[in-house]
Length: 138
Image 1 (cartoon, helix red, strand yellow):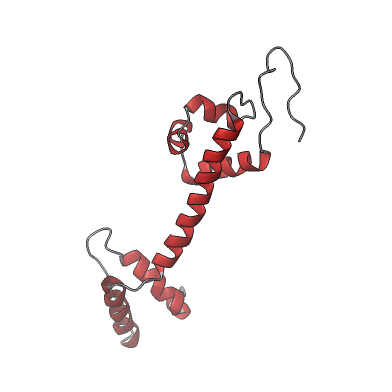
Image 2 (cartoon, rainbow, N blue to C red):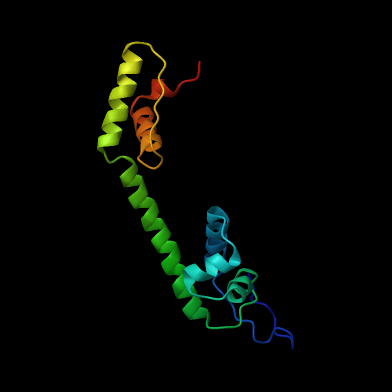
């Protein structure tokens, strides 16, 4: 894409990395972030983020793009860590696994409940990923 042409209204607009701009927009959409919240994550004002995403950036392109690249890289690393954590066995995953195995072996229906945030949902996801027949709908 060609950079914006200079006119009196936009002679200060600087060319930006269009691929990086698209990555940032996808990140913003995926995380459901406001411009203000996205700005906080890259240490930039809401107006700077807005101008960058709309391809009308006038400031230090190198500086903001360095921060954006760091954010994107950190997000990718976080996704890898979360993926590893999802398969990490814990006491809760073992307990849920045992309960689900008991339910399956006895052809029963079961209910798993407990405090929020202890890992029940992840444990069930782990169980169904290793036991594909358990997630079939009847």
